[in-house]
Length: 97
Image 1 (cartoon, rainbow, N blue to C red):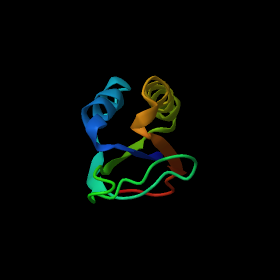
Image 2 (spheres, rainbow, N blue to C red):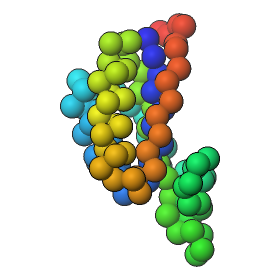
Image 3 (cartoon, rainbow, N blue to C red):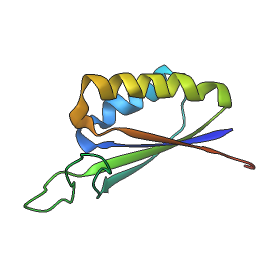
């Protein structure tokens, strides 16, 4: 089992959830309104007057075979809309109940 953490511009929430569902995954948890800045060339998303946007994040726990389909969908989304600021991180989950 793997955990996939997905961070993205808040405006793209529906598209991210639709992509997760398209990969055959139902469950996820969302964090709205998170703040931060990308490590490469991203602008700050601070919810302030100077940097008014926020990011959101989603985490989903999936069987190993679902990881690549989800990452491929997310990579395609990121390539078609670079302003999305989409990033995905995958962790191995040793135990769950």
